[in-house]
Image 1 (tube, one colour):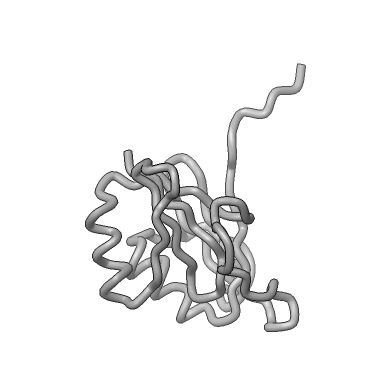
Image 2 (cartoon, rainbow, N blue to C red):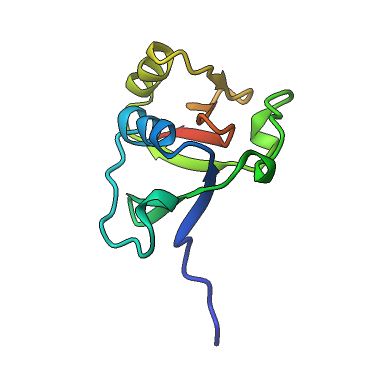
Length: 124
C-alpha cells in the first residue's frame, strides 16, 4: 500500500541567486548541499533538518506578484522550525526584513525572502 512518508523538499523561485544566498545562508544560516545536479548558476539546494529547500533561478516574468498584504499564514508558504526564534527575529530586523507575528499568540512569525516567498518561522 502506498504511503506518503513526509516532505522531501520545497522548491522556491528566486531572481538573483547571490541575493537569495545571502538570505538563506546569511540570515537563515542554511548550508548548501554539494550534490545538486546541473549548472550551479541555476540554483542551490539546502538541507533543513530532514527536508530540503531548493532554490530555482527564474526570470521576473515567471515570479508571482508581491502579495504581502493580508495575513501571510493564509498564503502559500514554507514553515521552518526554529530553536531560537528571538535570535532569528533580531537577525531579520538587523537585515531590515519585515516580520509579522502570528495572530494566535503562538511563538510564530512570518517573513519574506528577497523574492517575496513567505516563510513561517515556528519556535520550538
